[in-house]
Length: 346
Length: 169
Image (cartoon, rainbow over all chains, first blue to last red; front, side, top):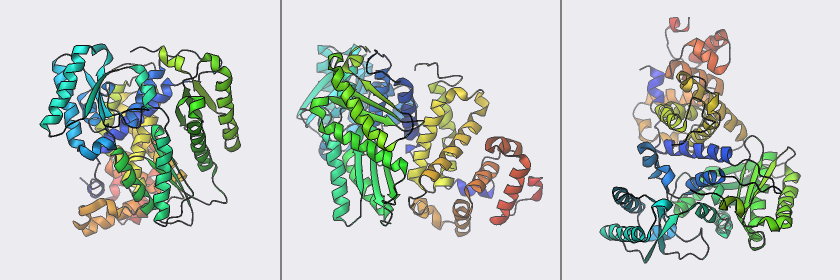
């Protein structure tokens, strides 16, 4: 081994490398699957769910499609799948091992447990203390539901934990949609991050957070030089929220009197997201995702139906007006309706 | 595992397996540019994204490594251009205990990471870490062999490494 090799071998390879590779693949697969859908046409697309599933995986749920190889399963076992409510009482390693035990036992018995999480946050009206266990839809029946419930109880008990209530659900395609629902919690967390930083005396222009995009955007004025400190504070906040040390944080130091176009666009997209959350009841928007790679593509998924054509068009226009101000190149807005999702089976 | 029309010769399973084989090279290449773990991991993700999206552009599996390293170099350079204004953490914080083991070598690593410009890093990495031939490097970086040779020679002088001259001939 030569001297340079010896030196570079000192750069240690973090465990997350393969996890990040899977995220990159999911990102690419998402773009392969979600192709433009015209508002007027509302064509039914079977591929859509595949891409939604990918995004959910990135968003933090542990589910069956990730169990495709031992290597992948190993990575999947590191994906956080329980939120902080559960974490208060249950150690992450214990939670991982409970799910793996239930899953292994299920596989021995001929069915597949695909995931587990606590309800709070993603599905409105959920019991924050309820543990949800997901059983592959085709494997689901009343007897197995009971079995899985008992297995979960048993393994939690063996580890010395008690769940107030456990619900076993078939893992259906439309569940992805409900999980990816845009949520006020994102805005609250963005505000909270901004407040924490301001209280600590940092000068912050903007904080945006879109959990389903796995993105925290922070804009700092150039005069604020303590970027690494800001990153550390946000990272520590996100670890508490997501139990994940590499949640992406996009910090930009900008001259506020002359903000670069890319940052302006990112901020605009976050502002659009805030607007959609505010009008959630009216617009029934379930998810908002975008990609700026290779041209801007925005995908908005709503529960509106074909008869709500006017409203769909209104949402599209509202978004377009905001984008037009900051983005001078061609872009695509995909409006995806509930009817598209309903067509997809497993 | 499903197959898609985008696969070309590289289906998902094979992609994952090859990526895993070369993950250390990819990460270290990214680290040469980023000098910190967080950004290097971002690059790994970006490389996986770009490579998987364009997997059908790989025509021969034998070229996977050079193909993926080329993507890594491009992703790193794009990232640095985009993030020019962001202040980075000093890399030394992340090297941890190894820093104290060999002062001379730490200086060398420091030079490799900090004293060289992006172009020089790339060439030194490919020549002396990956041990590519000049011909291969010239293909990866899209430069004539003569340019590659002279740049590597100058870079070695810059970091005062005593490599035998015949290696450059």
